[in-house]
Length: 69
Image (cartoon, rainbow, N blue to C red; front, side):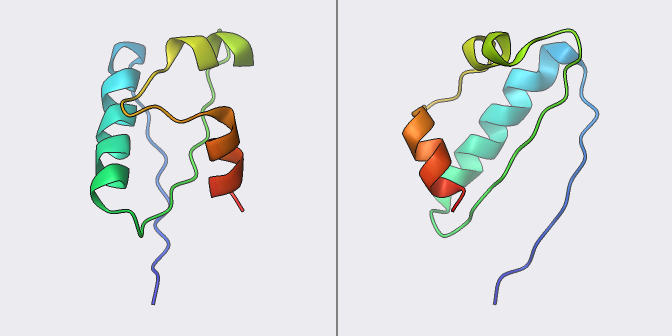
């Protein structure tokens, strides 16, 4: 049985990367989990957000799309 947990995180911009990396670390450690993440950063356009936000290990655009299915 899977449980869905909905989280809305209000994070200061300087902590965005750390929070996303924390989520990515959990994702890597638990491959049976699936995450869908959205971000709202009004001062940043989508392409800038993709360039600025990096997690390790990274995900290609194709992996992101396939994981969403």
